[in-house]
Length: 395
Image 1 (cartoon, rainbow, N blue to C red):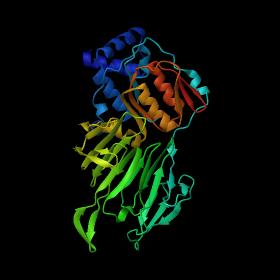
Image 2: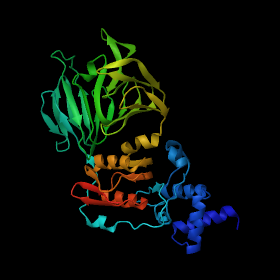
Image 3: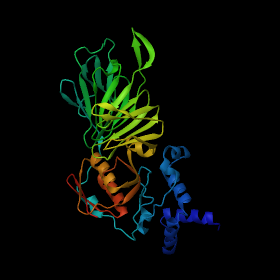
Image 4: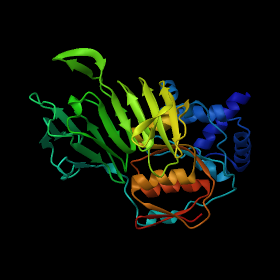
């Protein structure tokens, strides 16, 4: 048998759980030496239904890195979920680990869901989740409606005019354990991740500079809008500006994601389409000379010190995973993973041991219960316990 055929057969026998003890030992050594990367990836893609086009969209599918960490990880390298996805971990090389079976017996926690709160200009609040489908409010010439799909839609009424009673704001916020989509008055679509909010003027569609404040994480598909002079549309586009605590992002018509959580070390802006300019803020105003223009596929990083805007190539698959309904870990440390789980499952993470430096690679659907996520993470040598809404790391 040729070497290529032998490797393919070995991988297939592994997937079918047919390896003998000697074959398993050989399998482990070949994985450690990266000799099965090509065959493992091909098998993974076939099982998961990943095409060549998908691989171009998700850079992490282009190669299998050194993912071996233990013999027992033979079950974790291809931990097949009902969604046809895989999860595998990196770095730890231990000989055995017993997955904590008690997780399934504890108080489990449901995943986050579609929910948000609308705060109107007069200070009143509406739970969008509990509201009936249809019209929720009308203000400043704008009708606010909850669609049949659960989205919040702003619609400019035909008779609307520029608000002359002073600047008024609406705020849409998601709780921990919730996400939401809203269509703004100008046609822009916004997806809010958990524990996030946007604040914007009620006459958003009638102003010469569309400006909103963001806390947390959101993905934007900005509608193109042109200025009008004496009722005639000009070729001059109306700017769209997103402000976070450290930066200001000026865009025209484009698709981009902003991650600006308070508990993350960096603010990250990732451009998918179009063009954006990222400027550091000095209070409420951009710092002179400290700005960068992003091209599609690039990501800017602003640290807490906010002294510079760094540009690098973006991992689009990782950035957009939350918006597509799953977690994507790319050499993420345990603390980073726990912060994401904390926001989505609305739990408090407590470390009863020294925080380990494990790194994780892989995809997990956000629609599964917390215990299912933890069972997969435990293949990396970490143990957990759920007590109420507390997630305890007990490695």
